[in-house]
Amino acid sequence: MDEPPVDIVDRYRDSVETQAPEYCDTCAGTGARVEAFVFAELPSGRSVAYCAHHGTRYLDGLREIALVIVDHRHLVMA
Image (cartoon, rainbow, N blue to C red; front, side, top):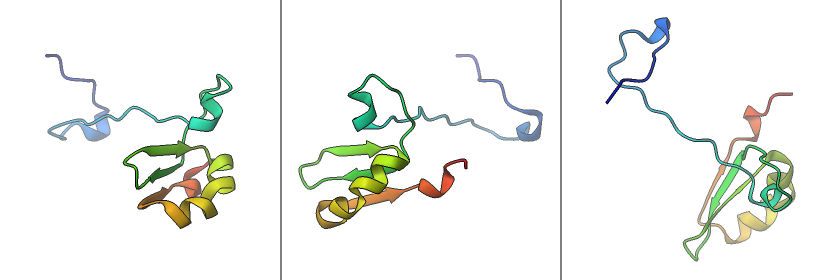
């Protein structure tokens, strides 16, 4: 298997890990692919992902029911 290209800055790194971006579940309903910044695991075992806008809208409700919440809204480029 071919190794993925590595930037010169990382030329001594032994392995490269990549992760596909997740998209907002609410925006996906409209056909948009908006990057998710808020993630939650629900008691049902289902997980949800929201963009910063929808994450802000639903965060209070998620705090009441979610087992785990990961909030990366601080990473949104202004």
